[in-house]
Image 1 (spheres, rainbow, N blue to C red):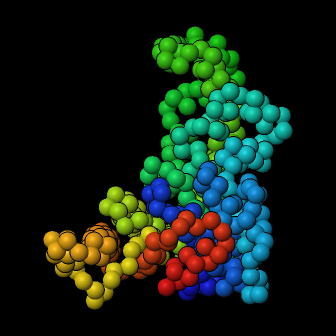
Image 2: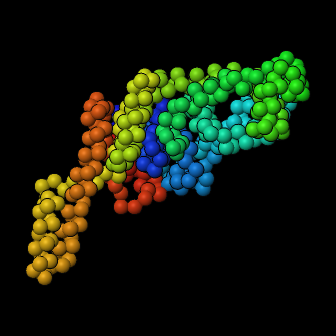
Image 3: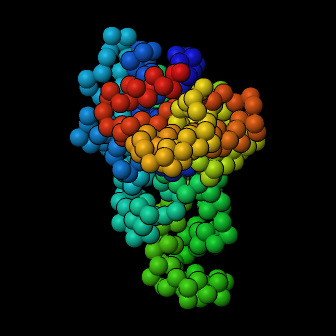
Length: 368
């Protein structure tokens, strides 16, 4: 891990995995270690709405602009900045950058845009890609660490550009665009050659929503090519050797299964997979009593009616041994399937990480 963080050719690290496995903490710990140990100017981009990153870094809040983290060791010359994706603000910035002020005002006022920029499925993942592209384009950062969205599936992050392109190229959207490109009114859409189609859509969506959607599509028409181009550019950034993907998984079957599925996708898409972080692992007590031996001894003490506390301790030990064995089996499901992928285990901490010292500890564990 230290070799990856220290390598000047590593410009982007993307932390991926199922929800609730510790991606945000891992991303923050990597960013802190990059700045403190390796002297790199680093920014961590989180999409975590729980705002844990801000709290752990001693910041009152995070927003769409990188904020410098104070109180870290800067002896090596590094800096650490952090930001949290504001989905709607990022969408607004894209609109402002690629259209006129008058057209931007029309788009912002459109009810369909207001809904899409805030709640449309996939918008968060796409805007995360947009923000990554913006950060990379400035060439201001030695390293960008991305904490991917807490999606139902980690693959949503990779699928966002293609999904947007399918949306922009969809038959319904092209039909809605045709009248505006031809200079016709919405009335023409409803009554002329699109009559049957539009009446069916009106019945489903309602006339007002259809009008809003048509206006939205017409207003964004000039930007569609830009959306598609930037989506393709960001996808190429993710395939570049300067980008490294880190899979983060807890030692649970579903989380490891999703990590394996994601690894297969990265290999298929020719994206650089750097390794697997097995988070919240428990230490095996090598050379100690086995689970069976502990339970036999506990039962013997209980039967003798003596040493009840020792018997309870033995049973706790047996449960912990079984847990570590189960976690090791689950981890092998991944490592056996991907023997060439490096992995590191991070031991479970006695309490949640909530400050820079905690992140420093996690960073050291990540570095082995």
